[in-house]
Image (tube, rainbow, N blue to C red; front, side, top):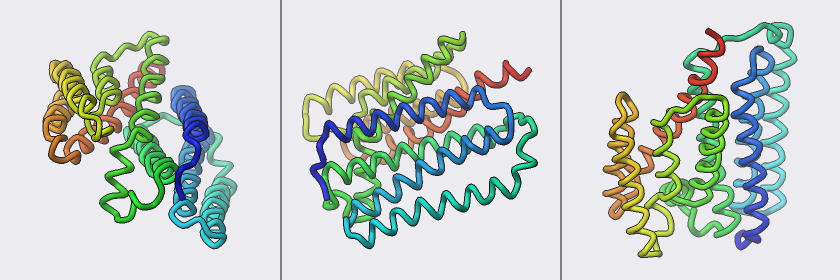
Length: 258
């Protein structure tokens, strides 16, 4: 299955980005265990929805449609069952720890990668995703992965900026994700322009101290090697995304709770 209307896909992707941005904002606001549970619930349900959609798109039959619906229903029942089993204990206030920041960040990244898979399948069909390696390659090195991610990161950055939190070390990653050298590989002008842009943003990022410097070093090397292989760049992007969201959550929540 493929060749779904691009306008329709953009509309659905935009809606999903808006939902994720709303959830990211809610991370700043949640103060109770029940609120935290529903954050995880929303991210997990979105992931299971994308998994179910991908199962159907790989082979659009009635059987796979049933499997897709079953995956979503089973996950919802299990999560809600857990909620009702521990509901009384979820009314307490919660102080986020490092594992909250990174687990929520990981769920955001997983959802973005699954968007790359699902929307890629919907637009291009199964042929480009016929093996595990090609599926990972075409899911990550896709505008369906990078541009929703860029929109979410930019939205989060602007939200923090509006609240007086300006972490400049995050901004180069937005620039790199805007001009990734691993997409539009057939456009020669894009390959060279994006390579120069991603290297430029990486060099700016390297000027910052701490772990961000190492992430931007990996991204700079990955940009150079993207002509040969995208995997080092992908590794840098995934690590950068994980740290981007975790850092954003900490920047907002820690001053508020101190």
